[in-house]
Image (cartoon, rainbow, N blue to C red; front, side, top):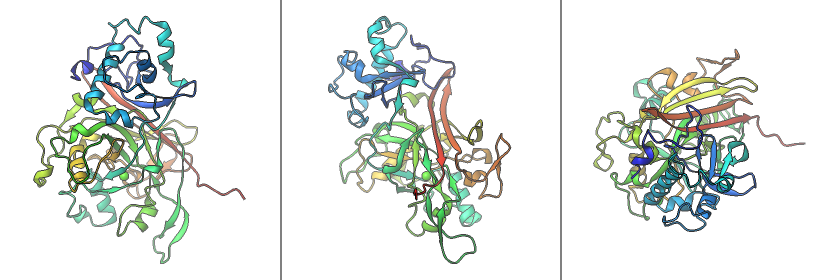
Length: 428
Ligand code: CA
């Protein structure tokens, strides 16, 4: 069914800038505030934001079983709960409404005024009310690099890593949309050579280049999701910057894992790109050796060829790209992550967000964190303004982008951009 919507030959009557991440083949979903300060669910084609609430009220989704207020909400959770069949019907209908051969909305000036917004007129919000957030650690290169730095290069991967998609439960309350500035966290660290910890601003604030997927209601408590069905419960993907404070992390993570080093902020790109839109970009994932246990075994292609890049822009300067990676380097697939997550009967709900873990590639230019790019501070990264970075400095903006490209069609995620502000200080 998604076939016609993904057709590379399809054209829209809206103007789409060359190299836009949002051609008519994309049709992502998001939530925005309109110029009239009304919150609505929408999509994007080129540089137009499209009000799906208004389109629905005007009757453009006739024949699709949707409640009247499904798009007049401040999150996509209910729409995502409607399931894959409904997502496809809606996405195909949007594709049809904006197809250059369809005159209905194209020639209705009054309706166009109600439905179409320029990007300047809107403010993107978090697309889902995130109930639970889990972060994995599924890039072999990243796990190997971190293991080499913090433990032993010869035993970089811990014994469980090749058998389990390792993960931890994060905190959803601090996930914010692109554009929201964050603050350098305060915390407790143990300086090198010291024998008592100190308290102060983190000196090692880092980004983590990740992607995340958003689920629909997948199971009931106690019932695992079989690996063959797992992809049916994934609505779509976003870019994800999982901010980390390496010095706090190093002191606190033993024995229970990440805590305050990880939960001060994580940032997502605001448009959720559906798995249907990503379908043409399936590729093999890395060969898994040893073969995983049967409940994690898959056949076919379950990774996606998504180019990723990270840039750092110090205040008032142009960004410098510091990393180029690809989602296809992930060792564990999203389906394996979701199945493993539920194998004990853990319940997954609509709007849950599951992060990939830092996506590092095989070469030093493709590492997904400053920890790795500057190799624990030993190899400073040069920026175009002449300055150097080993971690992120106050007032730097970190920008992540991602896109797929094939047969002249580019399906992108836009960007996730976050400015790091100095530590919060009480006014006294
Ligand atoms: Ca992470």
